[in-house]
Image (cartoon, rainbow, N blue to C red):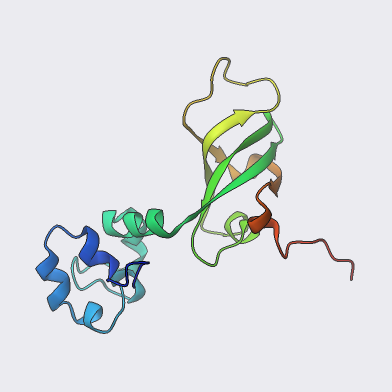
Length: 148
């Protein structure tokens, strides 16, 4: 999978660049996580979420999105979540494989439940989220409520 530079991402982060050049999957213009079994590590695609190459790819292509989150037990939290390409906030929240949400640069709009300053990242349980509002214009475009 190519990034903004046009090169395969794995070649940009893989310590052994020769490995990607010879890779049959890369020669087809695909990334290892786009096939059932990775040719490099011989692991199933389900293990990609822990792979440093895949994590690096997600970080390089994810869109930072400012959101306001209402939690049932802690109040209002403003921060940044990272959306993979083509994924909406609602897609991220409704993903059945996801139980937690990482919020970067968190700022409590209500009393800080932890007391003092918030850490650089807070991981919140999706089961405690009441609602999420995208604060960035780009992220909220096309998300208008519709009455059927």
